[in-house]
Image (cartoon, rainbow, N blue to C red; front, top):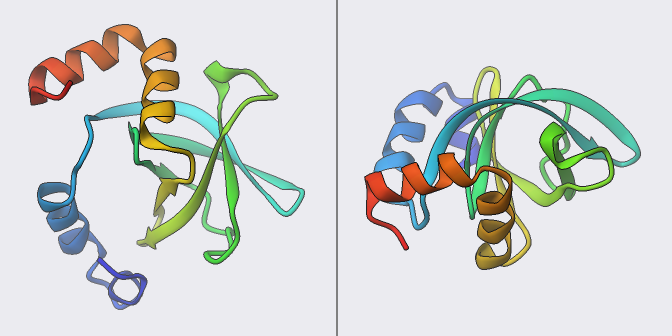
Amino acid sequence: MTKDTAKKGGAEKGEQQEDLSQREHTRFRTVYSGSVRQKGKAQDCVIKDLSANGAKIKNAMHLIDSEDLLLVINRLGPYKGLRAKVQWRSADRLGISFLDPADQVQATLAELFPNRWAMAEKKTGDK
């Protein structure tokens, strides 16, 4: 889904299509608190789902699409985060893609959320 589609109100349908057709890695639903940092400013957010490729976040609408950001998951601690970029937006949600290699992000997520990650992989059959 393109950013233009999201701006025209097609986000939910497009987002669902993206979920079904473009998943390369295990994705699991979450409700974790975090923050997004961009250009020296931080905003609190809720992380709605995570994968090795990216995340869906809520309540971080003041991000600049063309600028890199840092997603800080509170479980990681205040000085660690995942580098990302905005891929799509809807009324109150953003889709971000991680800039680091998927295997590196996957290892970080598996370490942070071992039980959730193992359950999600078992459901989808991912390695």
